[in-house]
Length: 523
Image (cartoon, rainbow, N blue to C red; front, side, top):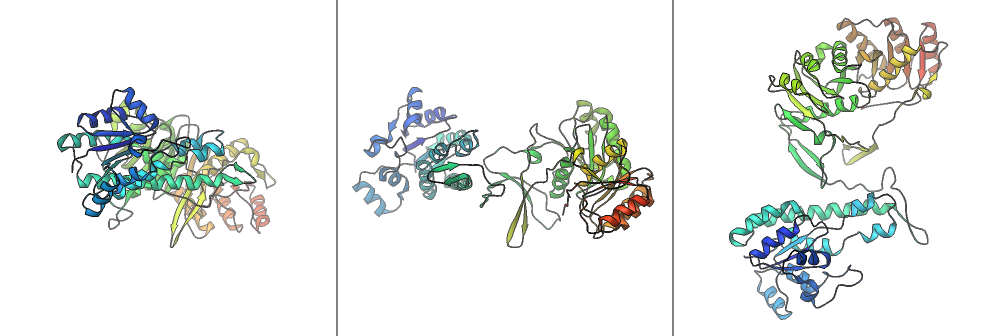
C-alpha cells in the first residue's frame, strides 16, 4: 500500500526538513501544524495546514489543533474494511498513511531550575501522544515515527515502492508505544511535585516518590547470567544516553558477562571514593585488595599484596588513566576485566597481547546512582544509594587513647573500603593499603578471624594496623581478636548494648577506638 499522505508535527525539528523533502520528492502530500509547517515552508517544501484538512482553526493557544475526527479518522480507519471505507468517504476523511510526531520536552522542562507549575503543566503534550497512539494502533495501515534517528532508514525504504513493510510498521509501533508509556510515566512522577493549596504550587519530589515508573531498553545481551543456564541482558533507562558503567566503551577482549559487570560496578564504586590514585581488585563482588597511593603503579602493587591468591582472575578498577608502568605490573597477573577513565597508548599496547582481557573505558561523566532497586518475591525494594561521606569531625573517640594522626588517616581509608565489603565486614589496613579482608560471615568475630588468616596467607604483618567494622561489634571478642593480631586502632559505628564491654577490651589492649555513628551494611 503506497503512502500518499504524511502528517508531520514535531517539537524536536532535527532533520525534519531533510526528511520532508525526501517525502515530497516521492509525491507524498505533507500535512503539518504551526511551527513545523512554517519551518518546512521556509525550506521550500509544499505543506498543507492541518486547519485546511479539518476545517477548524488551531485554538486555545495551539493546544487544540489535531484533536479532530478528520485527523484521527484519517489515521485510524482500517483500509481493508469496507465499512471504514464507506464511512470515511461519507464524511470526506482522507487517509493519513504516515505520522511523524515527537513530543513536548516534558522531562527537560521539569529539570529546569526555577520551573513553575504552569510551565510544567503546559508542557504536557496531548495532541502528540494521541496521534502517536492512534497511528501505532493502526500499524497495519499506518507508519508512525517518533524518533528523528529513524528518518534515514525510513527514507531509504520509501525510495523503493513508496511503501513501508508490515515488519517496519510493527517495529515503529512498538517503539511509539514505548515512548508514550515512558512519557506518561515521567508526567505521573513529576506531578507528585504539585500541591493544591487554594492554588497549584510546585515543590521538590520526595526522596522516595509514591510511584516509580521504570522504562528500560535492552542495550546488550550477555553470554549468560550468573550461571550458564540463565539468560541475561544489560538494560538502560529508555530515551537516555547510557551513563556510568553501562555507558563504558569496551576497547578489547571477550564479550562481557553478567558477573563481569556486577564486579566491575563494585570495583568502580570503590575507587570512586578516593581523590588520590587508587586501585580496587574485586573478586565475587568483594574487594580482595584496595590501595590509595601517590602513583597508580604503587597503588596497584599494594592492593595486590593484600591477597594475591584471590586476585587471580579478578576484576580491577583504576580512578586514573592507566599508564605504561602500571600496565606492565598488571600484565604479570591473569585478570578478567579492567575499568578505568582512560589508558595511555603504551598501556594499551601492553594489554593488546592479552586478547581475552576485557578493557573498559568509563565515560567522562560517570553519573551517580540515586535510587537502588532490588527484586523480592512479589515486589521491589527501593532505597537511596549509600553516598554517605564520613568527615574527621564526625568521629567520636570512645577509648582512653585517641588515635595518632597516622592511625587516623589509616582508619578513614579503611572505613571507605569497608563500605564496599559484604557484611559482616571486617577490614585491616595501613595508611592507604588494605592488609586483610573478612567478608560476608554470619558472625562478626569470624570475619575478624578470616581477615587475620588472609593477612597471614599473604605474609602481611598486622602489627600496628587498624581495623574497620561496617557495623558495631556486638561483643568484645571481635576487638580482642583484632588486638591480639596486632591492630592498634578501631573504627566502627558504635551503638551496641555491649559498647562499654567493647571499649573496656580496647582500653585493656591499649587500642584507640572511634565511633562513626553510621553503619554501612551491604547485603
